[in-house]
Amino acid sequence: MERLEREIKKAKTNNPFEIAKHKNIIIRYFPLGNTLGFYMKNVRQQVITINCDIDEYLMMFVCAHELGHAILHPNENTPFLHKNTFFSKDKIEREANEFAVNLLLYDKSLEDYDTKFDVLRETGIPYEMERFI
Image 1: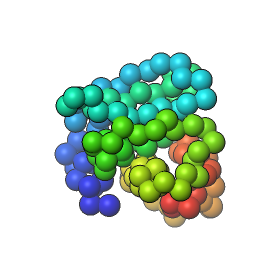
Image 2: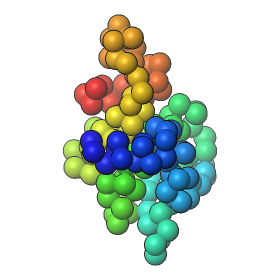
Image 3: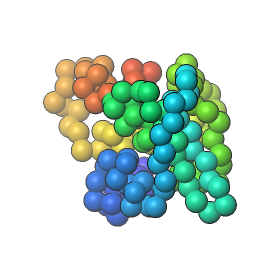
Image 4: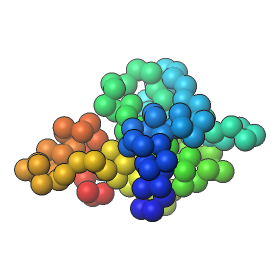
């Protein structure tokens, strides 16, 4: 993931919130019900919207996922990401999920964990993302 490494190096962090700030992407928080978040580009401004009612670990993953859309698919307004759509077969959703997992695990040594599920549990990445490790 060449783009991922380039963004981490530019921002000097793998924190998706900090990378978004570095890229001048607006992050806003609203109660979205069952929707976790979404990405959109309005004119030239990129915007990530995150459900304010989810826990901070899930917010981190949702931000990383939506940042993946902003970087990999900057001109696409992504459909809402619902709690039960982590297994979306849509190519851009898979790419954003893979980007998010790789971003959040960038500075982690997988040898420090016994199983993939330990990695996921301790980093707050949803278990459905196991296939990207």
